[in-house]
Image (cartoon, rainbow, N blue to C red; front, side, top):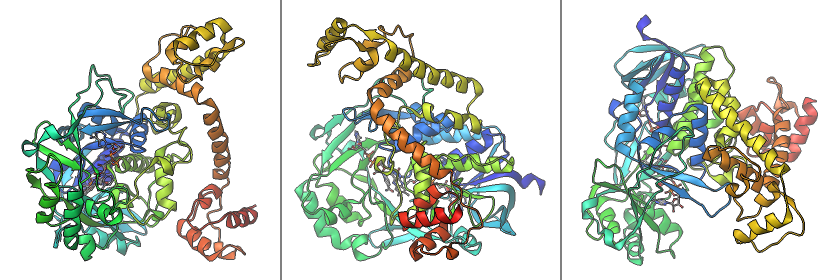
Length: 616
Ligand SMILES: Cc1cc2nc3c(=O)[nH]c(=O)nc-3n(C[C@H](O)[C@H](O)[C@H](O)COP(=O)(O)OP(=O)(O)OC[C@H]3O[C@@H](n4cnc5c(N)ncnc54)[C@H](O)[C@@H]3O)c2cc1C
Ligand SMILES: NC(=O)c1ccc[n+]([C@@H]2O[C@H](COP(=O)([O-])OP(=O)(O)OC[C@H]3O[C@@H](n4cnc5c(N)ncnc54)[C@H](O)[C@@H]3O)[C@@H](O)[C@H]2O)c1
């Protein structure tokens, strides 16, 4: 049937699927997005929060490249808050609390109104594969759809099993079916599958909470937005509330541990280490009593409160008891119990950095199916997979972001090369170039990639290029301007610096003083008025010049190793001296460069030296 022929088929309407489908359609490819339930497009399975350390950087990077998550969060949020403001620039980020209802509803609307994009509510059960190349998908309703590329973004739905206490039943998320048969089709086509687990806290009715016993936290009226294009007069500042667990909570939880599915063994799979359940926290840190509990509104349209910090899949009576031991929640009523979900995923060592499968030509995988956890991780993978699936159908080479260019590069590189025993989430500590990959400078790092991808309109690219040029020329000007000693010392005194100078300095040297700001220096260098994000760049790049330069040298070294290509047909068994662990890792990943080989678990410096000698 010609009607069922598409360029790109996207399976999944979660954060990965949405970005993949939008990217592909915006690149002019005829795209169809499958979801098991149309009303949950863009659904946040758990917390309404977007951003946080590392995750904010992913959202900002996607925004510069043409992704949706950043501007959508800027539009439909309850608060945006600056975190780590007193720390160095690598740590400063924005954390958003989305309005979960409007985020989802408006995302569906956007998908429906995007040219070249169709949606279909049906469950994909089988891949149609011929001679190792994917040709389309077959659905539960028995319909075949054909496509030149397929992107799988199936989240927690593949053979999903929900666990609450000793109750276990099939579901992808609570209230939604699981996808039972697609896993087998992947296995039949040579894809290795494993299982992970994740969990979510209970939700309560906010009318049953005593807020007088809690600290109220607001966001910023004028935050640094996720999207460089967002212009808003003011952002909402709906509060969240902070309370803590007590020794009573720990006591109750300990008493109830025998009912915990992680203790009873009902849950055998690994969950996200960086988002442990309260039962896990009590097991691992028995001496700690005052765990933070943030209460966050899910939406202005609802009375549901999310209890950040109380993730658990304990039985309902245990959840009630744990909850009521927390200050301000003594009379709180649960409207949805917390639960865990176990699901199938495909370890990402089976992928190329373009997100294309090494096992099935034309098949791309993105999001939780790659063993990651988190909306931002899913969305950024979905975006790149959608771009590269579209490019493949246009006969273009993939676009790949490397670890020196973005957290998006760190993420894909890590999941392919490093084995983690739990779902992977991005963290600042995973990047060796943290000062370079800041939340605020995506437009400095990724503009050329954005141009190559071709989603961002030309006029926006031209505008950002001018901004980037302005940053460099303003830095040069600031460094050239000489400030006489007296004037410099007057400024230092005014801003509360103790040090005094014995001769004149450049304006650039002055700006390196902690309390001296861009606004103090701009008139000296007679700079024109720039947008805030440009001013911020100029200041940060001058203040932290030494450290940024140090990273630049390391990045050059990294790029050199990345450019040393390994021949496709290399036979690792023939290279003498390489350890068996290294051989197994190299054979599994089949790295494209020496740089890539050096990051595979189990490959040592000695193995790399032998490899280099062998390919010369
Ligand atoms: C209980 C729970 C708690 C979580 N807690 C958090 C959290 O607090 N913060 C956080 O950042 N992350 C959390 N996560 C993880 C986060 O939800 C996921 O990482 C993220 O949503 C994954 O996005 P995704 O696009 O890969 O998949 P999902 O958002 O899971 O979307 C999957 C989509 O694929 C569709 N689908 C699946 N299989 C098929 C098929 N065969 N045919 C057709 N359609 C199909 C589904 O209908 C759905 O639209 C949690 C997840 C769960 C389930
Ligand atoms: N279950 C899962 O699969 C899974 C996986 C990954 C992350 N998560 C969830 O994703 C979210 C992001 O993870 P995270 O570790 O970055 O946590 P986070 O965003 O909750 O915390 C980041 C920082 O923000 C602070 N913070 C948290 N809530 C706040 C609020 N309402 N107001 C002000 N400050 C607040 C925290 O103290 C911390 O310093 C969390 O809610 C976590 O539970 C869940």
